[in-house]
Image 1: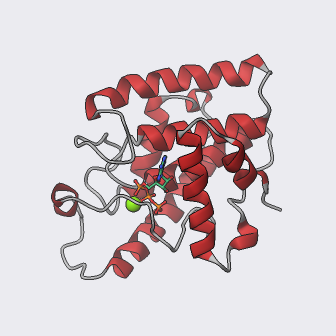
Image 2: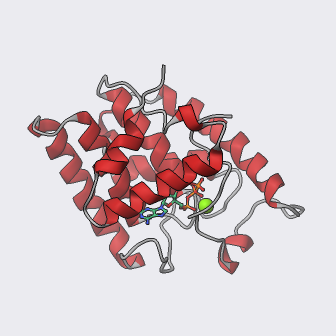
Length: 200
Ligand SMILES: Nc1ncnc2c1ncn2[C@@H]1O[C@H](COP(=O)(O)OP(=O)(O)OP(=O)(O)O)[C@@H](O)[C@H]1O
Ligand SMILES: [Mg+2]
């Protein structure tokens, strides 16, 4: 199993009616089948991502393209922003674009500024992006994959999302969501800790 995909789905957004309509496969009956199709699509998307060398990877366009590559075989709305409000995000749908624009400006400043450690940048970046929650679904996976990509592009070691807990996915997910909830309150320590473990 690759490390972006958490088996346990606690804390994920349930699909709403419009999203279900957006599925490209008419004969899906179980969540397991959907997971499998998404995984295949994600593998393809990762191959695409690993070929990308573009300078403009810190941009809204790049992020949308990535989401499209990761989920476009399965979801018609892949690569497009959500149009509904979600519990996880305080941002209204019409604020997703402006919020992302600010986000990418900030990330560039954090990287160029040289004052924040990469552990801090990675955690703040990951949290802010999942909090904006740009897409109807797949925000967690896209953002974990994107966070790793940004680390790689900046010659940093890549977060393993506590791979040491891979045999206990429930616990792993619980710690991850709790850390994000702490970050919601401005305390980034638990998320930094969760993301500190790197891939070997
Ligand atoms: N309190 C929270 N604050 C910020 N982000 C959160 C919070 N709770 C959950 N999240 C993020 O939202 C993601 C779920 O959103 P979504 O369902 O769009 O993504 P996904 O890729 O389908 O989910 P999954 O992580 O289950 O694969 C979680 O993975 C997590 O990153
Ligand atoms: Mg989801």
